Amino acid sequence: MRLVLLGPPGSGKGTQAARLKVELGVPHISTGDMLRAAVAAGTPTGLKAKAVMDAGKLVSDDILLAMLEERLSQDDVKNGFILDGYPRNVAQAEALGHLLAKIGQPLDAVVKLDVPDEVIIGRVEIRFKAEHRKDDDPVVVRDRLKVYAEQTAPVADFFAKRGQLQVVDGVGELDEVTARVKRALAQESA
Ligand code: B4P
Image (cartoon, rainbow, N blue to C red; front, side, top):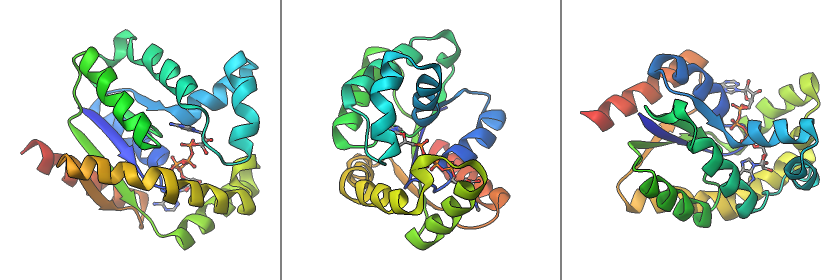
């Protein structure tokens, strides 16, 4: 299974990917986690990305593509992957298509988690209080939602036009949302 999880910041992409990877037996590739690891390690990529991430903006397409290309060249993705956080704009969606064609691993499914802004703001506020992630600050979250509407929402249209998009209600208990995603994937493979 080669799956892309789309959705606004805080829609639960990372949360659901962590559950689905166990059931599907494929690795979870989170570009957000990879960037946070680079920041924590103080790598050149991390140094460039930190301020951009803290401000809730998108890190440059070049950095993301290089990171993803390297990750998708590793052995553990041979049987598939769950991609969470990429693509975040149409240029990244196009780059992903070229990259997957090059490595002979076309996508099987694209699932978008649908969650209203007010629910997202509530969820992320809880995490901000617990973890103090700078980009979870309520002011930054509003900017991230703006970036999503302007740059990432068109990615859903990109996949919809290709008949690849499934939209799943992302509001509810974690188990409920997981069950909805699994139903969408079962339909895709039927
Ligand atoms: P990400 O790490 O992708 O952050 P996210 O969008 O907030 O995460 P997600 O939607 O996975 O939400 P989560 O499950 O954690 O990106 C961070 C930053 O990295 C970006 O702003 C950008 O700067 C940079 N970046 C990453 N990829 C990039 C790219 N391709 N190009 C450029 N820049 C890039 O859930 C959020 C919270 O909700 C959690 O606390 C969770 O517990 C809770 N939650 C989840 N599901 C719930 C449910 N059903 N009910 C109640 N709470 C729930």
